[in-house]
Amino acid sequence: MTRIKLGNSREIERTMNLKDIEKELASIKERNKRVEADKTWETSWFRVLLLSIAIYIAATLFLYFQGVSNYWFAGLVPAIGYFLSTQSLPFYKKVVGKKIC
Picture 1 (cartoon, rainbow, N blue to C red):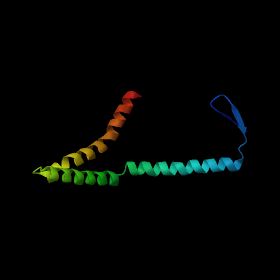
Picture 2: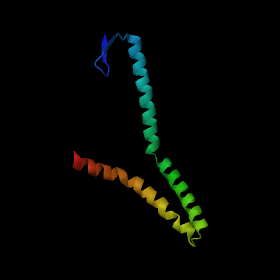
Picture 3: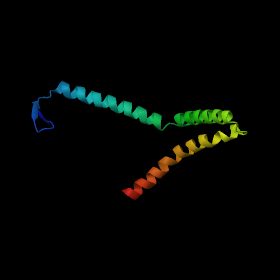
Picture 4: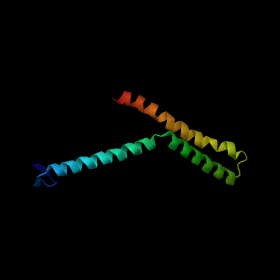
């Protein structure tokens, strides 16, 4: 039997049988799989390269319509900046984590 405490100090008693616990455990495991898949996507090289290419295309088009003479080369600046920032963040995260803890 478990007690669940609600906001205004009311208590509800509820019995959890083995099937309820198994369902809860299965839902937690399923959620963990989704979270791991999301984390894998967030840190993947494919995602970083795909976004870098999209940034390059968008910046190049913007610069082209603004009349910048060397728009092909100038479009590299934000794309390379994004790429470098995403690759350097884990390093800085470790450095800051060591100093804080």
